[in-house]
Length: 352
Image (tube, rainbow, N blue to C red; front, top):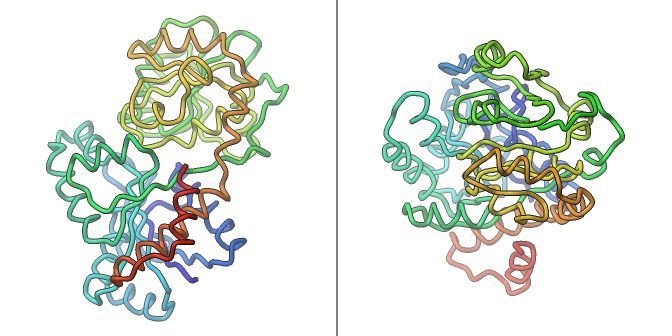
């Protein structure tokens, strides 16, 4: 099977969406499927308003048509609702080609926090985008329930994985021996980083990542270490050098950083919201509380070995198999055919 994945999130961006599809390409190939990417790298780009580190593609429809006609994929998957995603959707709709999508980002909350745009307006646009497809993949049961209530249709489960060879407990202590509380991600208003920085905690706070709020927050909180962007082995060492991972976001749909932290032996402190409530086992692998400081202090005493063990259930092979099963099921449904029982059993088993 040849699958075209259209995504507006790609290198040099560093985020969960990019990491997901980077890993999916290799896992799918090992399973006998080829994933071909359509990304902003093929187009002219402009800086995203208020976030110039992210480049928005300016895709030409004629080029997209010629490119996709040349590829002739067996299936089409649209990962993001940006310019590349919308142009690919237009191509599929005009040719009556079934396609699947993924819901990765709560743009309504992001646009509301940055520009004051009512969330209902953006959810309406996202519903229009996704409901035209043959299936929409989401990462967690709580997100699926929320989107179903909002009128999204044909929702399919698609979990994520973590590389437990790279992210693992290590003896590194880059930030000293005192209790170290760390967070990893974009330093931007929608990530709610300031809620972490305001906490009264013993020891040291560390922020790994970059973004539009970095200069402002580093000046307001000079006692906090801002490391800038890290990846690969450097990122793995940062995780392993901390004692608790604090996840202040209230709007993430999953949070791959949660899995990376857990695989590194870090218990999670977070709000009881979508993402953490689906991943964290309360009192075992982390503490969820509307008081983030209480959660962070409580997580210090948890058994790190049990945290690592829990992370091992998130397997990239499992995630890739479920993605491919979803693609097949959506194509069969779009063609009015019943999915063979073998594929139904596979999809059900892999969604657990």
